[in-house]
Length: 395
Picture: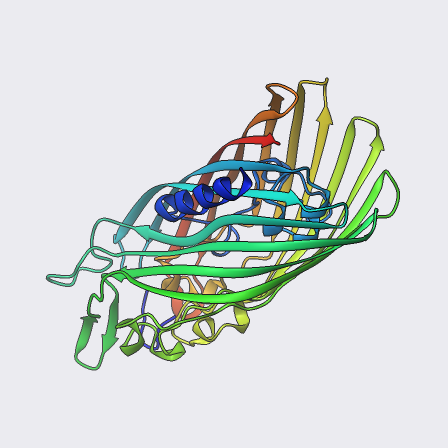
C-alpha cells in the first residue's frame, strides 16, 4: 500500500435500517482479504455459499438476482468478530500481539412491487486492521502500530423475473470508507523513520453489482454474480506518503463468481460457490513495497437440514487461495488476514409464521505465515472466531 512501507411501512423500515448501519458500522474486520467469509447469517452459517441460494434480504450482497426469490421481509444481523494475532517482527525477540473485537452489523429489506419486479436495500460492511498497542520496532518516540480500514456498502437494488424460474438483478454499490494508520515505520538512508499520522480520513465511491439466478428445476438452481471495481476518492494526507503509490486511494476490488444449489431430499439443501476477488488489480496492491496482495479464489460449500417445521440447522466450509505471499509478510503486519480455511455451523428457529431468529459460529483456525526472501525472520500468526446473530421478519 505504500511506496516506503516496511511493515508494515417498508419505506420507514428502509430508512431506519440505513441510519442504524451508518451509526453502528465500525471496526469491521474480515477473513477473505478485507471481506467477511459470508454475508447474511443463514448463508454465512453455510460457509458463505449463497450465489444460487438466496435465504433473506441480504441476498443482494451475494447476488442481486436472488432478491426476486426472497419474500417481502427485512432482516437485521450482527457478526461479532474476535481476532487474535501475533508476530515475531523483523528483529530477534521483537514479539508483538494484537487482539481485536469488532461488532459488524448488516441488514436488508425487500419488497415485491408485482410478480416480476422486486426492489430492495442491503447494507453490509467489510474491512481489516490491527492494534498492537506498542511500537512495531524499538524506535524512540514511535507511536503504537495500528491501522483500521472500514467500508460500509449500501446496495439499493432491483430484480426482474422474465419468467417464474429466472431472475436478473442489478444493484448500485455505494461505499463509505474510513481509514487510519499510525506507527508506520519505514527505512530511510539515515535510518528508520516514522511516517506522519494523518488521523482518520474518509472517502466515498460507487460501483455496480449484477446477477442472474435460474431455478432450472424445483430441486436445482444455478447463479452467477459480478461486482465492478468501486473507485474510491482520495484519503487526504495519506496520498503524500503511505498511499502515494495509489494517489491516496484504496479502491474496492472487482469480483465475480458462480454458484449452485441442490435439494437431494425435501428437507436437505446443498450449496457451493466459486468466487474470485481481484485484489491484485488494485493500484494500492501493486506497490512493490506495500501489501502486494494477489487475486484470491474462494470455494464455499454448505448444507442445511430442516429438522422440523421449527428448526433448521446449517454447516459449511470455505477455502481460499491466500492473497498474501510469504515474501511480503513484513509489509502485512497491520493487515494479518492470512486465513485460508473456515468452518461454520448454526441454526435457525421459527418464532411464528412470520419471524425467526438465527445464531451461528465461524472458526478460522490458528494459521502461521512464515516470511521468505526479504521477510525472512518475520512471521504472522492469527486465529479468528466469529459469532453470528440475526432476526428475520416477513410482512
